[in-house]
Image: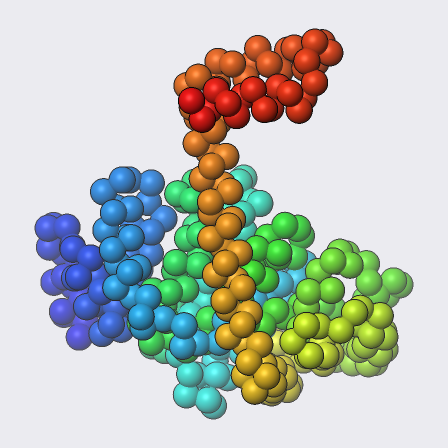
Amino acid sequence: MKNINKITIKTKKALSANDYFNGIKKGNRAILSKAITLIESTSFQHQKIAEKLIELCLPFSGRSVRIGVTGIPGVGKSTFIEALGIYLIDKKNKKVAVLAIDPSSKKSGGSILGDKTRMNKLSINDNAFIRPSPSSGALGGVAKATRETTILCEAAGYDTILIETVGVGQSEIEVKSMVDFFLLLMIAGAGDELQGIKRGIMEIADAVIINKADGENIHNTKLAIQEYKNALHLFPANKNGWIPKTASCSAIESKNIDTTWDIIESFVNHTTINNSFLENRKEQAKFWLEHTINSSLTTLFYTDKNITIKLKIFEKKVMQGEISPFKAAKELMEIFKS
Ligand code: GDP
């Protein structure tokens, strides 16, 4: 198998969408990696192949559980993902893909999994595939690239997709819209337990898992669990009837990782039985359709030659009170449509 990979990669001839598809279907990770790079590329030629490839993969996608993992830096996301990944591969016979999303990070080039060494054991496991966050320059944005990468990974046979995101802002909402289960990782701390994380993020979590429940921290963790349970109770019930769960684990000692997985499994059972699992995916597809149309229209508008010239003039007029912002916008739209 290794030799075949080498030969395919070494040939200079560009691979066709079908070549990529066949490689992906065979579970060839080198081809999968190259295909993802294609998705992230801004080259028109690459995008054309990528589009065709996604079409080919789409019928073989969707058969996985997609899990978002968020939490502030240092909470133990990488350690947790590695522990969960190894547990799923060893004990549950799963194939695990780990993707990262970090649209806010322009400075670092948007790579929160950049140093793969953070997941030493998982990165060398044959049943795992780890992909760092695409750079923020990826065509159509990081979220689009991550969604499309998910499709390719599913076609390659990965049945558990873990999407890591830093818990600091807007990226959570985007990740929530591309996963089935959203897990918030926290640590028990002194003082206000709810500090450091936005209330909005807790509201969209399907489970709050308190990590680092080991050593002297065990007592604090028990208190924190109670506190989060109380906090989660204050939120309105989910449409899918799921009541968010709270539990603790020690990622570094691989303790209680099975408890977290049990929660995820019971969520999948619950939402499959009441059909909200598929409903949610349909809603997500609709969301991304609208989202993509909106961002494409905005790009079209602001890159229109007529608009770029006229926009400056109208801006000035609006600021000087010569025309209302609404009338200006309406006139600009007329110019755009003409
Ligand atoms: P991330 O920034 O959220 O990805 O966090 P990391 O996984 O890089 O972990 C941050 C630090 O916390 C590292 O020094 C880890 O060794 C440590 N850590 C992670 N999980 C645990 C845990 O369960 N218990 C303890 N005591 N330390 C942990």
